[in-house]
Length: 267
Image 1 (cartoon, one colour):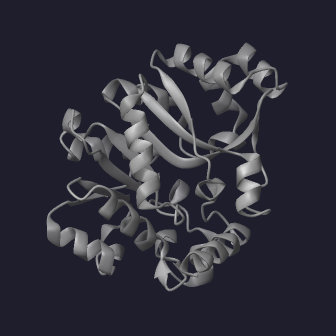
Image 2 (tube, rainbow, N blue to C red):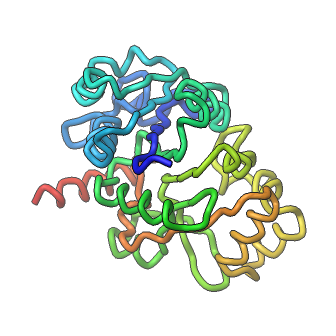
Image 3 (tube, rainbow, N blue to C red):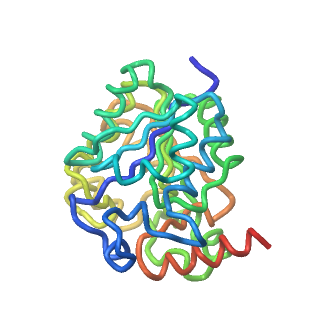
């Protein structure tokens, strides 16, 4: 197994529709929405590129031509490391298509993030991969606690997964060790946002376990063990101490929060 993962950045349109932030900015794809002087996607490419200097970087997007002129994308293209992938109808289909273009099993381990994850940093992503590689997991989901997110910014997130021991939000960073780990993505096959879709949660957990989840009877550890049993792969949570990594650009509010945090980093 390689020391560096393949990187996949999901930059497609949700349900193929124009995002409100893209509409406001007058661009065709959300990943081109400018923030602090650069499109969202550029911030992410500039984080993953140096984090893994020899890794192949896949960008899944509905129209690859719309990002060809971005400096960070063009620079990566010139190194021969970039593969532009046509986004498919849903998240899982897009991931499967990208893996096929990257050579199937040769694409693993695979680190997946999104084009609106502008607060991700190189050192953070390296740590995710290092810790996941050292674990016994087939798949890793990166999470942050409510307390750490609110410490980063009080309006960073407003909705959380509530467990009996902790409230968390996901960081839009996922790690897959091998093709077997793709089983854990089946709940996302129809696309959309997992937390807002009870049917999808039921598919992941099962009906009885969904009731336990909704009533807050589960610890985080028990929930992930249930998911692992459900799909026959070992899925582990990885908690990052910096809640800023759970703040992506989803709407006007989180755009404003991310903009403030990016400016603060510049000093």
